[in-house]
Length: 205
Image 1 (cartoon, one colour):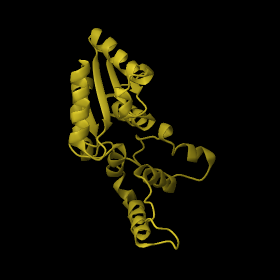
Image 2 (cartoon, rainbow, N blue to C red; image 1 turned 60 degrees about the horizontal axis):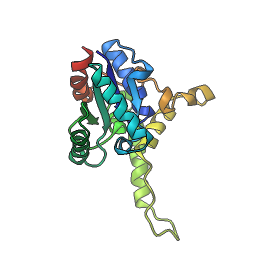
Image 3 (cartoon, rainbow, N blue to C red; image 1 turned 180 degrees about the horizontal axis):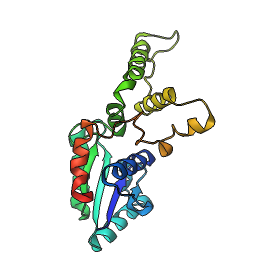
Image 4 (spheres, rainbow, N blue to C red; image 1 turned 45 degrees about the vertical axis):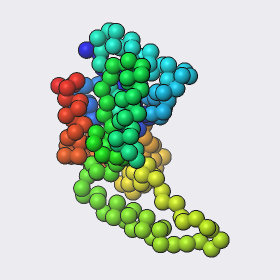
């Protein structure tokens, strides 16, 4: 059975490759996981959107399985409704999982925040204090509140605090190079990933 997984970006690709390799001893080939470069691109009538539809239809015609794994972002119910409406309109065949856990709002970074090695929790304690400090400060001549760094920046900072200062160590922080199997940093056995495993079990067990 050919499985095609459609994701938003490089971070999703690397995480899913590592997770599926760790849990199911399956190595995802390049063609098995497709980057859409953002969930809105699936609706596009331009090249990116048509490419997604063509790949899904081709895989369905060959008795394959299509999986969409996207961020729920600020509203899980709304994102699910939008994708299911597109599914109905196009007649495409696929199953959906929305980060972080297929029930709540959030994204891949929400997952990553919740599966760090518990020993490293003090790093996020410091980060949360930093965010609290930013919200309490004002800058003379600035009308708007200070901007809180994104969750992507938070995850980047987490790894930067743990890894060395050499160029090779800095490379390991980048989304495409992260090692989610490294138990010093991540816990792929976390209960927070139970819903993801339940979803993937149907296709990789």
